[in-house]
Length: 611
Image (cartoon, rainbow, N blue to C red):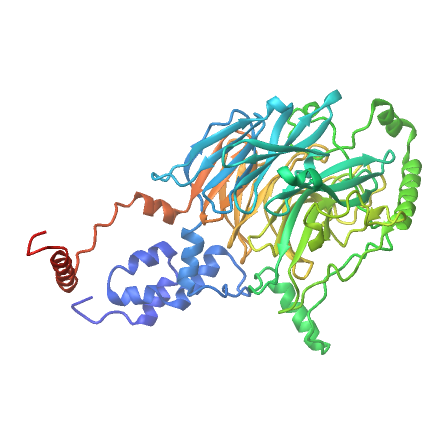
């Protein structure tokens, strides 16, 4: 290249367009001209769309600086390199949860322990800090945990084996200062899990059967510990009482603090959005399309609930989808004498009672926020249903500021005698069996794992839900507009039938979303481009994944193979393996100034020229 004229840049660029990205980078080291061409924006735009197989209608992420850096982010910053395997658990690991600072995480397992781990060791490895066994409290296993907002308390949810092998749940609160147990709260059914509302209060559930197919769920607000002065202050308060029909119940409660969302929208539904804008312009309507809202005040508004059968009766039992639990005589009645006509009659009576005894919804409580408008809202989210016992709907109930403490009226004293049930504020039907939910870090987006029902299916028997697909769909719900994005993510699979499928926990970071699956892999997608970026190998079902809040290039995965695997990005692995950089030599000027400063200090501290 030095001895004669080189190829023109246009010809070099045309050659590079036919090379894979790794070859382009190597060729760029040949000379300055090739290096400059190897960083061409048009080149990396073409490589980006072709390598990741993204439709060219998808624009680059607004925060991206260049196509080259965006390609590098998706290629080099994904936590897909296994760096450590933790084997301290002795049975299936069901759930992982990071602290908000990211310095610790907790794990729950079928070995009935909850373990705490430290992520800030000097050598970069993760080490076990503490382990608590819950067998002394007659627990079957631990299934879920969550740190409170200031990382001082840990909520642990598990299956409590009470009389007659009833599988109701229980919640324990553990102090992270001295690992003492502060309180225990019953939680029924146990797949309610429970969650924190704020630093000192948590939400639990209870289930009361009204008939063979009808029940009501009571959601309770509990103080995590009892103060000395709490003798005259409530430590528990009823939040909501909701009617359930057709053998379904409220499960998987979580709290979303939906503040005014000034961050830009994700590029989740670009095709549908562009079509909607085009149609609106054709009709002369520039307003945004409104989400489909389900008014629950005048229809089958009450959501369904149910209690599960014993896990041990299902072999691989874990946090499975549950069939309502009845006594032996009641179960015989369901199977033999209570036919479809009896169930339909009971459902009609339940709806009639609910319509007359349910507090009317306030439409102003849950309304889509317009751009730049709205107020801070706190939503209680949960899975529910109206057609069958399998959870197929997302219920939303707004929590008002005066409900965030146990002070005030208790046991529904604020209701009139005619308002026996609370109505739901909003419902989104997923049309499939919901097996997982997770919130984005800013609580704007709700990600939902579900296994779809056949298109056009009709449910005539609540106890016989439709067959579910093996493919898992990952839906995205915008809590700002209260609409489901039409474009869902798909790559992971599950194989268990309706009455045996179990909860698969997912997690969301700033740029990525990850989920477990029954196909022995964890999966990572990019939130903005809707593409699957990595598959994480295990030897059995992957039940849970968790990103570090402090560093999204650190991911954990938990599996039925009794291990927790630690995954880091290729970039972080290279940094950890590279030798430490030597100290930079000081310039002559800085050395002279430092010496003069030292001499001045020594002269000031001396007496008659002596130190």
